Each structure stands twice: as C-alpha cells, then as structure tokens.
Picture 1 (cartoon, rainbow, N blue to C red):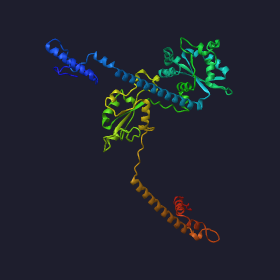
Picture 2 (picture 1 turned 120 degrees about the vertical axis):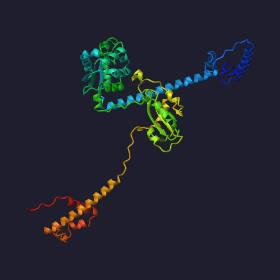
Picture 3 (picture 1 turned 90 degrees about the vertical axis):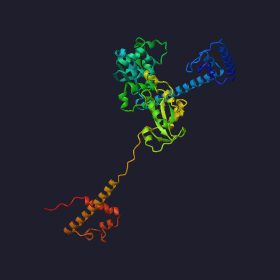
Length: 465
C-alpha cells in the first residue's frame, strides 16, 4: 500500500492479508491526522529504498511461509539425494564394465605401486610373495603426477594424505606387476593382498608387523599400494601400465557428466547461444539442436546447428532450441577445484525465461536421451550427386569398345582367310559335323560377347620371318 504523501513511501503490506490491510489503513489514517496537527512526524522513504527490517521477519515467520520453505527444503534435499545416487550408480557401472573388459586379458596379474621411499626394499617384496606362488613379472619407474595422485586417493584414502600425494606426484615410484606361477590356484588379488598386506591375518596378529605394508610405512605414508578388488585393479592397470593395456584394449570412453535439458523459443536462439558460448559456460554446453515444437516425449528434430537453421526459408513460431547443459562433473573427486561449478542451471540462461527446464539430472538424462540420442554428434554423410557427364562419357567409352571389338573380329577373319583357314566347316567337330562353333552359336549373347572380348584382347599371332 502506497498512500499519496508527496510521492513518498510510508508503509508496506506483504501478502493478501485482508484483516491486516484494514488495520494498517486505519492506523495510517490516524497517523495522517496526527501529522496534520503537528503531533506526529511522519517517516518518509523514497520508493527505491528498502522497507524497515522489522517488516520482513514478520512475514518470514508466518506459518504459511514456514510451511512453504520447509517443503521446498525437503524437495531440494530429495533432489540432491536422487542425483547423488544416480552419479554413484553411473560410476559403479563404468568401473564394473572396465573391470570386466580388462579381465579378458589380465585376469592372472595384479599391479602395485612401491612408494619412492620404499624402492630400496624391493627384495623384501619378492621374498614375501614367493611363498604364495607369485612372481614379479615386470617393474618400471613412474611419476604418476597430480592427476594420478588424485586417482589413487579416490581408490585408497591412505594415498590421499598430503604427504603421500606430494610424494608420488613429484618423485618417481616403482610400478610392479605380479603374476601367478602356472600351477598356482586362487584369485591373484587375494593372494597378493595376503602376501603383502596380511588380509588373512587378524588385526592384532604379530605376523602383520613383519609384512611389507607395515614395515615400509614411514611418517603415516604407506610403503606400497595394492588393489583391494577388481575395480581398483582395473584403475591401477590403466594408470601404472597404460602402454601394456593400450596395446591390447581400447581406452575407456569419457564419462558423461550429469546434465539437464533447457528449452527456449527458436526466436531466442541468438541470445541463448551468445550466453551459452561464453567462456564460463561453453564447457558445460554438451549439445544443442532445433526442434519442431515443445514436445518433450517425442521431439522432432529440425536441424542440429544455427547455420542450418538460418538457411531454412520458412521458420515456424512454435519451433524451439534445446540445450543439453552439464550440472556437475562425472568424476568430481578427480577434478581440480577450479573446474567445479554449481550443480544447477546457469543463472544467465534462466534469466532469459526458458520454456522448460528438467526437474533434476535424472529426469534431464531421460529427456536428453530423446532429444540427443546416441550418435547425435556423428557427422552426416552427404549424398553424392549423379554426374550426367560422366555417364555420357561411360556410354561413349562403351560404344568405342564395341567398335574396337568389331574391327578386331574383322581383322581376325581376314587373317584366317589369308592363312587358308576356313570358317565353320574348317573347324574340327564330331562325326555329324557339329563342333565347338555350333555350341557357341547356340549359346546366349553373353557367350558371344565374352568370346569377342577374348579375341580382341588376345595377342596377335607371331609373324614368320
């Protein structure tokens, strides 16, 4: 409510609360009478100034507002839990698929990483694995770097300490490859863990103190990293022996980050793409395309880029542009802190007033699968136009070949007459005079053509000297 008092704001009422509005009006009328008598000095504010701080808490603490806020917070928490579960499920599926792929060729080997400070104790490692039917098949120095340190930190929390990460990121470690002897049975990972880490022993067993995993530890930095399961073994093989793995198996595909679909009217295409291609957002734009309407369940693709869309002579007002936007990272634990961004739709795009935004990343994945199916980014093959000139030239060449074959036949017959060779009667045949020529004459046209070709391409008879 803004009473006309020299264009100044005197009070504000939030919401459609009729009793409060009536009460406020009555109070302001009384204040106006007192102000005219000089008994009250009215506080005046410009329209652009904020209202008193006391006014807002009263609204925020109303039962209706609190109920709405609680419900929204609950929905937001459920959305985060749902998206986190989807990310973890996708990561498990990727790790399982990679583990199965590597097991087809590397089921009987197990990698390990000997830390820089423990390399001089390699003999202790070989002595420990020998009773368990294992041998050291290969070893090579390696500096895993910062990215490799993050990978190992995700696989084993002990490798994620500051001291351990700094050691393997900057100093050379020793990559080891263990293998079972031919007659040894059992899982290679379990055997390696028993030999080096004592997984088969109790925690208080004195024999654990003599194992390499205990003896080689220094200042809370483990002396050796050994995979604990199939997933860790696959990750360690890709990290420590990339050349060996890459020579047999293709590298894993890049994981797809969680994403949503954002739809705008096609008439907003320039503003939308101008924002989406900004340096801070271009890495989050995964795909985009133009569609016939706002149908999300069965979208109809019009074209895949703005250049194709601008060439369209007729543009419909109901056509839309849909963006596939990442709202997170596929492997956030492996990313640099600078690469992280809010797990929500970009504010600049939301400010343009989209027609549709996916509810969450799970729903967005389903919608984007319909808008941008598998193979969407594969370039389209252009249809080859038929070259009429080439066809005419081909016909001309066929006519030329036919003429040459006819001339060759005539030359051959003239040569036979000069040498005293007669036609059909001079050819040897059976008792009835039916020979090879008759069989050829009774054959189809293809036989005649093949014979003519043979005559035309056969070498000329040698001329006697």
